Length: 247
Image 1 (cartoon, helix red, strand yellow):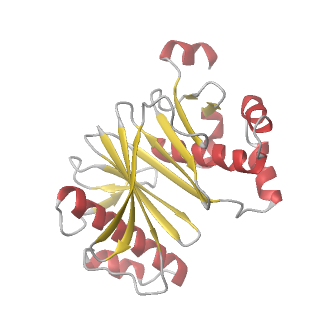
Image 2 (cartoon, one colour):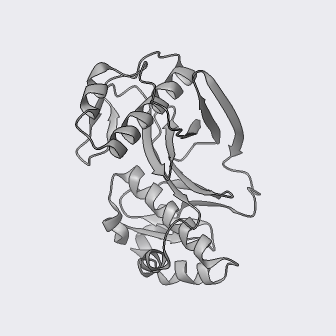
């Protein structure tokens, strides 16, 4: 099973909407300028990715789930999730009935006060891992991004932090909401991103959308590879019996 993560660095040009239903374009008219650009860009990126992967020329009908998470109205179509960071919009697309969550952060974009707030929300084990890293700010951002991607997969907000514990030193996580999850987080020169994925996802394909019909492949991650890189972190759920023991 494979998943796709695509991102798009927005330029100061009008967002193309030729693959979007008119009702989505009309819906965006009432938004502020910033929200309208992000709203249309995210859905245009999803539409382009759906066209590339499945050959579907126009974005299928979308609805909002009870948790506030957008999804396709056709249950046979794949799960997806949006994220934003600076002028970057991203989308993750899960194939074959899997689910996915995505979060992105710009490296060092937040104030020290914000980072300290992130730190306060972490467990003692997460704090110990951060303090053992060479760059505490980068490590804090990485764990926060991981956490947000998982909570977006489960449909929870960031205030639901008590349902999730990360154990980065051992490469494990525990979610009381969804007992089986894996998450992959990478630190690039400017961007930290994390994709939370269903078990069984073996490959994550990375893409950069250039515009029009142009794409750039950023390579594939073998999710189960033993060596993913020094700045890449992969967490998988603890076995169910161990999760129950620690709840």
